[in-house]
Image (cartoon, helix red, strand yellow):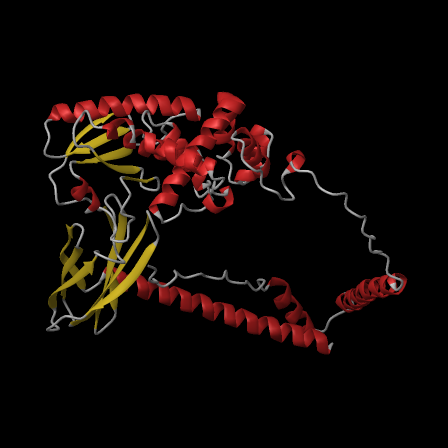
Length: 471
């Protein structure tokens, strides 16, 4: 009887709490809607100005009908070609109901955005009564130093400056031919539009790159942006049969494989050099020097990046090209198509893709290639049948049988059975109480108990992460 009275009071308390929460939510929602619909802050104008590569200037002018604007916050983010996020507080020189706020983003160093970068931003204005967040704006950076001309064919767009339209037509024609050959070698072509930016001089080109770029870089591809940058002095320049197909290979290859997958740099760059129509003789000579001195670089050192040293980087390009050429000649075009296709699955890593498409692991591939070049093989546990291993002694297998297992099993069963028995006894007792004849007061509580709604559990809300700065 005491238990029934406690249950009735508890449910009445829950009912009151639920009603109070629903009323609070209703009033809060009504207040929020009224506040939103009568926002006193109006945006009069807002602009951004790109002064590539030095800065981006953001400006906003607002009017507050009921209070003084005290501060503005600008949030800037970018996810391509790298993740970037930061926020800045901007205080008006003279707080007033109408103010213009300005932020100068220095892009000459750590905040550098290469041409084609996707930048998002929004302002949050604060006054004496609250704040106002503007809808997010988005734009792509562009090299504003030049007046660009454009010509497209299919998914390719070529951009150039200071040259006649006929120059652009020649670039488009040769790029289209290169894309056809690259697609045949990779087993498929472009899936999304790409941009090829053609600079006239090396100085112009280097002005579009971050300040810490290696001095030997002669072309750049940003697969995350689907954009590439090269230098072309004239239509007879070897760049058109070397750097252009090299850069285009990177773009096609990364469109054919799964987003976010880490392709070995040696394979990525090896494919790009392989698809060039021109490989300078110096690259062959550098590889020959390494073969003569048995100083080939290990593939594991070329998985994530190439050396910063120009000579070692040149060797890395040379041997990556030679290895990819060996793969095409040894395994054939169909198997290489299968390898690229397998890399389109994020469930597998490159080693698994190699095994599935070519039937070899990374150690076997490297050693087979080294043997073909009369170079010493790499010794390791994963070299397969190419390296002999001494017989291993059998290690004793530890016993997995515990002598206390019967005791633990018995205790586990008791821990399960005893609570179940207790619940059965409790339900039996409540069933007996429920079906006895209730008094008038007890019957009233019982009806209330039967028709009270069940309490709800609100879903947990997750807010947006605060902006953070990342170099």
